[in-house]
Length: 519
Image (cartoon, rainbow, N blue to C red; front, side):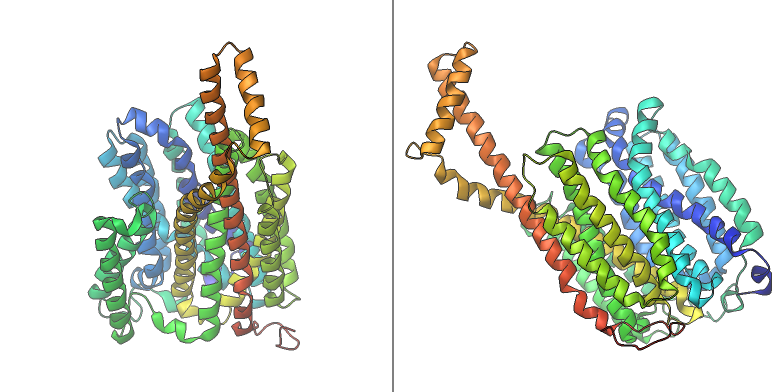
């Protein structure tokens, strides 16, 4: 850290870097709620309008791993301020977009600018706080990161209902302006990150391969289910492009003197293990967050607001737990806290896999609260332990890769969960349908009850027969879908448990005292 930055209160620096982080994270989730309104006003189809989300994720994924290189190339303060300015201007342009094509273009710019904001903020916090307080720094960062997913959908829905979907982008303008002013006063480059320091040649091959590979991968994961995966020529072509581009990228980056992505960091076994754990945690988190509201809205008849009220307590539990975890990290072995977090996360999934269509509101809320506590006990210490041994000059690269693997894990989790949901629902429906026959006394009793109820409403016997069968088939489909959700929650719980052995590969931060063993 430079002398200028040392003289500035660390909490002012924290507030400064949290503003753009919250702005970026809120904007990731805020647009989801407004998609139907965009579709109507821009005269776009359902498939077309989803590119408003996909385009943002693709450009975000491309920029994340090159954040450290760009910080060294242009100087971190200049690069951070440029990203905030570009993000704010792109938000203004998104709000004013006259058609879908221009909205998607500006979302690409917004995603590219936003991709660097989180890893730069993490890197600055890791350098600002002394080693023994880095756990608390990551806890504060985690509170800001969780604020977005909790507030984003509710804020987006309220703004869209009360004003117009365009205002979900306009609200970034005052936040961006404040963030720019604060950055200019409170953020300074450390000596190892002066503009262009140590970089004499641009890794053009790495830049091109990274853009193509990560862009193609994100599109495959986002569009795979709707395109029926490998039955689609489009998905097969993009998958081949992803494999070739990323394989070539690995070779290029390991041989280049100044690679755009420093893959040599993965020679550190602890760093590699931490990233793999974060990939799986991202898989579990994003898949469960996608499945729970879907279950509530499609099978339980909850409104979007009611589903949000089920999700919110879990987010609040995470917010309340994170500062406690940050304080505990100053005295406790972070790996043990991660172990407890993974066990709690698995327990929450096993609770969810027992839910039925008769479950009450609180039956859904409690597992969500348990999951929220588990995530707080996983994210904060895992980030601290994984990044603590990285040299300061590489911290930007490390945070970029760490966040990228969490995001890719999330994309893979959503894609896998959506695919499994469709296929398991069909499987369980096939298993249940044979029980719907005239020789089953339970079926006969239920059929007669429904038939009589329909006849009392004025339907003829033939119409009542057909109506009763239709209603029973609907019940079978609901039960099949419930069994599918339960099985996926069980698999996600196993995924939490499967990565526990990797904790043995994590190094204990040097500032912590005591034995190095996990046991």
